[in-house]
Picture 1 (cartoon, one colour):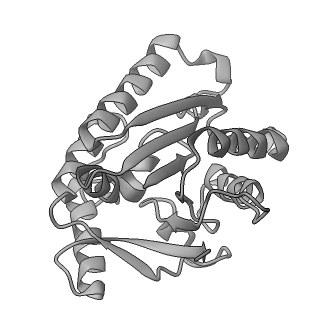
Picture 2 (cartoon, helix red, strand yellow; picture 1 turned 90 degrees about the vertical axis):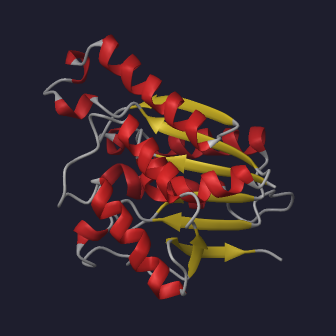
Length: 226
């Protein structure tokens, strides 16, 4: 089975479904990851103040994390960090359409539409548009994932509210996710931040308890064509 994970920023792919990707890679499925944004320039007053060395270092982190998880193909783009609302939505839609046409995945994972981060919400909108159910659409399942420090920080005041209804057991690959997150040195944080290893483990164990397993990642199934 071919799976495509679409993320706005470097590290979102790990935070959202890193353990699930590792599990399915081990089981022989082909995982492609697309990171649409460059992920760093919003830290500066002007986008061009970010050095090329910093951008290259972050891309290298994405490559190392993808290799650790077992990703088949990593595709990176350069949409402006936390400024996706300055780009025509059509540009995002066409990028996703091209991705899907190239990868031809059966399953897609993307951001949840009710996240606090504007880039996340626009990626969700673009994916929903690009994956409209026209004849010949390869995608049969579309899931949204949560991103700690974005999904829960909307405090269920932004719609749609993340309502997970599918849980992937990841007891054997959770440590791989945590190790991949540590590769992103500039993004990982100390506890009690949601992106700390301790918090990520607690989140997986909490969802595991909901699903009756040791650890799980939670997703909202948007649609399935059987």
